Length: 293
Ligand SMILES: Nc1ncnc2c1ncn2[C@@H]1O[C@H](COP(=O)(O)OP(=O)(O)OP(=O)(O)O)[C@@H](O)[C@H]1O
Image 1 (spheres, rainbow, N blue to C red):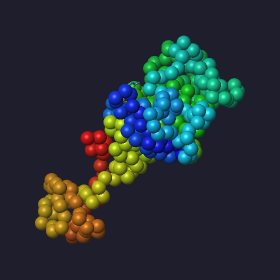
Image 2: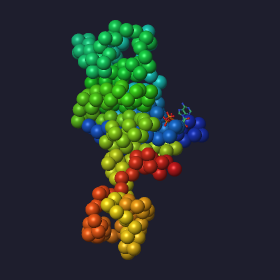
Image 3: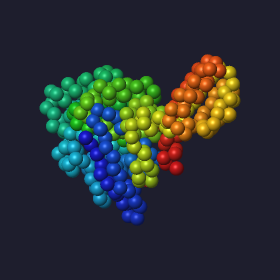
Image 4: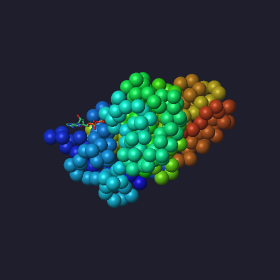
């Protein structure tokens, strides 16, 4: 497992990271979100060892992460680091070799990944002749070519059209075996909600929410939403619940005692058809807004 423990980083007087700790569980995709300047890139750079922490450390299975282990990580930095004048296939094979692969294996992996990303026909082209979206695909290929033990991706999907995002996500899912932890930062919350298993929300250098997306999006389970075939106004007269809103057939209410919602459901059924009934889900954008306020 990849984790960061008590990471703090100062830039002069500015405290960019303040005691940041979280885990990135293997086989799960962890989304890393936060407003501009929250400290995501700084955290990722420290994980990759290209920036030193003021205190705290990145860990691999509980022990301090070594440079040797980092060599086996796949990293997509914010400042994309490819060679504009080099042919893309040569470039990817080169990256594979840099990470210790023999040339045959590096070439096999390169061809497989380029094929999966729909770039096989461009393999002999110089990087800078590709569209920005395609250059981005090559960038992710560079992070994957050496069969990394962990992936740290800084905004891997920014600037990609939905089809390219889907192709990249499919590739990631295929490549990410149950042993590989994946951390990726993104501003696109709807994408994060769709792709991630876990989420870490950073605000002004602090972790303000962390957990599985399912947990975070489940919201307060005491809030229920009901849609009946008729008028739901009768709910206002029920004792012991707090009605948040009733609009015609739709009602939102909080129960104070677990199980009370079942009584409400019974009452609703005795009055007619119930079209919807269940705990209210919260949009991830609301979780994010609430956490970073
Ligand atoms: N080399 C540096 N020198 C001084 N300040 C820095 C440096 N790198 C980052 N910072 C500051 O640290 C804070 C965190 O920046 P960071 O780039 O990690 O945020 P981020 O969450 O990745 O933001 P974005 O989403 O805009 O990329 C910001 O206030 C930034 O200005």
